[in-house]
Image 1 (tube, each protein chain N blue to C red):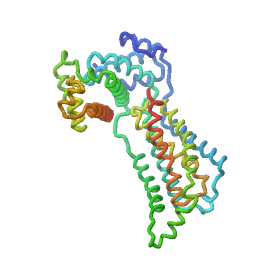
Image 2: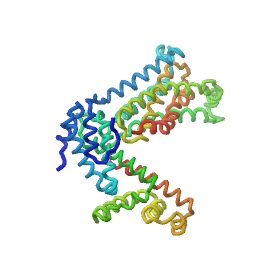
Image 3: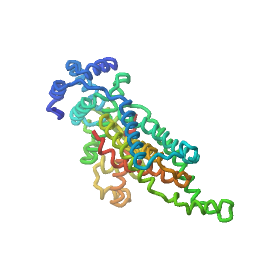
Image 4: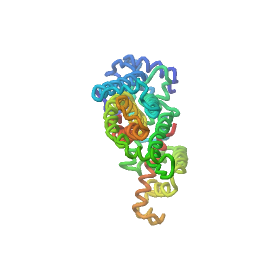
Length: 226
Length: 176
């Protein structure tokens, strides 16, 4: 295929026309399907490895657990939708919903950190603070690693779709890939984790978002440049 | 005369379906549109090269246009992407060439427009950065000369040029 510049434009147009083949148009739903499917596979893989946590059904799961997972879901949906849109060239205002969603999720680790570090010795909460500090769940960082690994599948799907498309802002596409991979990957793993204290879910169940956001911002642009 | 939006859209639908005659007309018309688009964005001797680059990108990525959406904004987004990429390459390899718009010989108006665009961009970056970019990249001073004139150290001049150009490229990218 002649995809190189020619001595003059007419020659280029002639060679491109000669090689023309019908193309099937890229649709946003292709991207949604691909990323949704990757999330599902990641979720099934996590369940197969770690087993589903029945506490979600029996009502045992804490409010923090639900709030964190639902915020991850909202962030995953907002960033996936923006990512799909970013793969198709257009001029106009770019929505900031994924970044506001990420900021809203950011409230959870802040709350967790306050809970862990609020050492008000003479306060009624003192005993509670001690237990949070000594609770093994507070320091069980492995959840962040597993969630991040699950996010890898989502990132692969996102990059594949972006490569099919034509993202015109590579940095933004990188951030969005990170937010989608981190949130959906974390969600896929979190449904298997029985640790539901605010200190645990607030930090380790949301950390993949931060990890993936920065990793994808650096790694994704060179992969999707066109 | 450049084709209008409905004509472009009709030709593009046909080209996506593999109609060679329509694709030929479309590519020619897109070439004319791009030539106008880039006239005030790059020096004249770089225009044809850039138009060809965009035509190839346009052709390669033709599946990403949705007939339910307007054609020209889609084309403009691709053209801007390649333009920004082109700016980055030029900044990287020969910043002087880009800024010294050789439209001087062709049209006074283009020089004025380029100057106005640059001034509008310059107010959006810190004065220290704009000052040294203007001296080194437009005025042609050496790093040392710019350092002496501004009282900044040579490494500060380098850093300010680097950061300023990066910021300028981002600003250009953000122009809708």
